Length: 440
Ligand SMILES: NC(=O)C1=CN([C@@H]2O[C@H](COP(=O)(O)OP(=O)(O)OC[C@H]3O[C@@H](n4cnc5c(N)ncnc54)[C@H](O)[C@@H]3O)[C@@H](O)[C@H]2O)C=CC1
Ligand SMILES: CC(=O)C(=O)O
Ligand SMILES: [Mg+2]
Image (cartoon, rainbow, N blue to C red; front, side, top):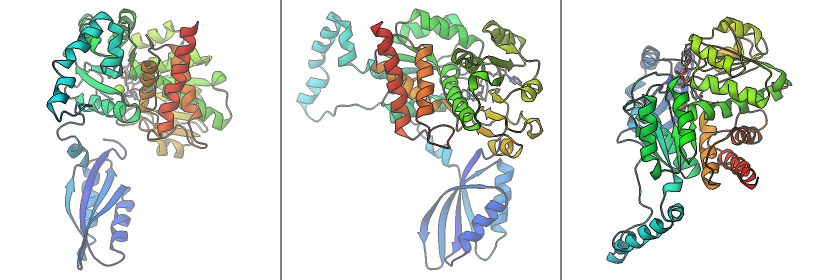
């Protein structure tokens, strides 16, 4: 478990006298625990109960903090430690909801039979009408085979479901799209492509998620060719869009022209290879990359990138380094050169924590929690669906990246994911490109 990735809530009792909460927060701070929300649950004459959200590194770190609080004595004690994250997942995070209520028989006849039959016939006569009289064009399949769930690896589609449900929550809340997780028990490209082709009619677009490399490349390429609706592998292109946006903003801040900077990519899987291709498409002249797998390096060379022998070579020679290996703490502080921009994007744990990279001399450093495809995929799909796009193209992705840059507040690297403007701006930028392409 990495830097601040272990989230728990502490239920703490303190005597109702000023200064006791301060003692608790000091004890946590001295052990480098990161405090989130503090909620007062009960204030009694004698004692006060509070819930403190805490980010620590691992179980041992948590136990150390709990012991330090208990050692404060004087009536201060930790009653219990709860796992808020696990609780938030009880029963799952999504639920298919009706947009119409049925309160009367008349409602029933309108929403269901016999009324519905006429709508079916309308669509049968003119299939385009399904865009108006069903939710298909606002529904995206979130398809996974579970082979590259975050950086957790091939843990299977069911274990990956919390991530897919999470993507559906983001779709719903940020851009009003219904996301439906589809869990595949095969990663064979022929079977994946066949299955998605057979189910695609119920969806306006297909988001491929956490499908590992290299089979993700063939799957996406074939589905893009064979389906008449937008298909995008989020770990490739959603990530590449956001990485490009962050790189553009960081290089503006340090006064470097990204196109002329030396950019290094560590890890050439789904995310890393797409990032390299996107940077080259943007105009980066020196794009270096490395991977443990020689086939991944050969793919980079095939796309026109320069293969580096090792990550050490990348760290020694590049102004901007991006890492998407899934390996926590891969980059050691002593590898950082002064003034470098470091985007260590692996989740749930970065290749180097941003504060460590900054301490070691990086000019800018961010991890995958900040530079995350959540800033890209909702708006990209919203824009594509709004404009009835048949595919997601490079110009749409570059426009999305530039919209993220434009939505970034001064001094920030990327926008806040809860800022609705970023998703609106990305959608509008993507729509604009589609309309321009359609007008040609
Ligand atoms: N921040 C974000 O928005 C996103 C972050 N990611 C993260 O990126 C990581 C990788 O994801 P994917 O590309 O989908 O997985 P992937 O499995 O397709 O690629 C990982 C690649 O890293 C390489 N690798 C592993 N250890 C290495 C090392 N020591 N040196 C060089 N290369 C090494 C592997 O050979 C593989 O090619 C995951 O942790 C994931 O969470 C992925 C997508 C979005
Ligand atoms: C954010 C994301 O898609 C990933 O880490 O895989
Ligand atoms: Mg992913």
